[in-house]
Image 1 (cartoon, rainbow, N blue to C red):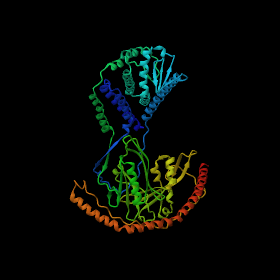
Image 2: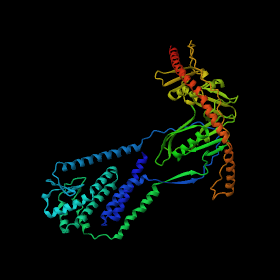
Image 3: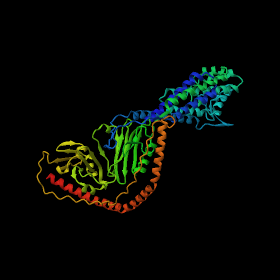
Image 4: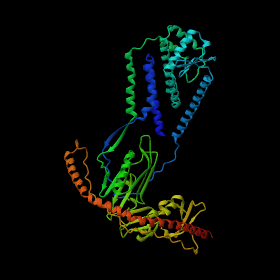
Length: 627
């Protein structure tokens, strides 16, 4: 919406610029035909030029970072606050204006058609003549010329017809309709109405000038102009003989022809157009130097970082998705892309996924340009892969939370790690039994004292996202709900509309009588993936390019860099057989996964049955609690 209003403002400014150039430089010249094309060119330039944008690339030094990217933080979602959209208000007013002027145009066209309909037409060469009885000023509409012969003598009729023939032969009606169309689109711009007046006036100058060449008595023609001023009943959408500025037309008829060298005035508009392009149609794109085509930045050993800024283009987002897919076999989806009038990102959703597992998600939606953030990927010593999204806000935290899912799940876990599933303390065996498709988030909290792995299932996460939660009559947020130890829950009541859930724990203030509750249904056991994913061959680390460019930079450093690149290429060449073997192993692994996928489908059907049993069980519990 903002882009549309900027376009309209630019077009309106160009219309004003062309009119001012005509008014001060050309309106007193007798280059009537040239002025006609100048004014029409101004209208079309005003709607075409704002669409043309010239881009220039400025290379800047990469932003320094001292952040330890090996720690992957939790996701951050920016919420857009409610505010009145003034663009919609202005758009509504603009559209209402267009509709009103379109209605007026339709009425004018209807009135014109009423005048022409059912009248006797006399065909002569390429012209059609209609002799009316009404007191209407003579006019032409395309090749039709309308007049009332009873109001004029033979000499006057000759002048009138010669004048209107010029309008018809030079298709001046098209100029009138084009001008009317622009008045409808730019009805709010005062310059367009002055522009319309200048075009119609110039068309009369053209017709007067050409008609006078074919009339022997120029004085009689001028007298005819004065006589027509008494007929003020004119038809809109036509080239009519009457004009209010008769005096100016007579002056132009008697004015000496302008000297040809005055044509240089038309060129004066070109510097103004060039200035417009440089001021408003030049887009500067900043790009960082020394960015490797594969890994944009290695923040620390074993960590690859892919930075996204407000100026990142769709092509660059696509390139990053292809790199992550090729290098890590991670499907990256960029959606809900929104930009402002400066083509800066203000909205974006990122989803990182491998197979059926979602590693992490992030969504930004704001009226302001997004803050810089990065996709960080690292590998642990035990072979697991961590993925996270790092924002500027996360960099200020001393204790960071890693919200990611280890892509390779069947790998060792530290013996001292404490595991929590939906807030309840658990162990490695129960964690292995979880269906990856039912996992919403996996939070790994790292500090010097201990390591905690907190897993939240989709069913448990849904509670916090769709309901108001109260623990011991205190309203809590999603984070507090995630940290709740389920072993301490005594009761959990859901109100009738299902919007509010109240939880009472063992240390709460409520006393509950023991009741003989039915045993909950037993969930089905998920299939266990016994196969081991093939290990990707270790890749050598690419050398880092020196600052500057090879010509003006440190030539010695660049020469050393070229040697390192040659060695790097040799190492990559040696890895080709291993990469081919890895691709074959992955193809075999995919075949072996087919039976497991079928088992997962059967497990999903069992889970549907289990969900229905759980609904019945919860319903029984609610009835018991209400007794």
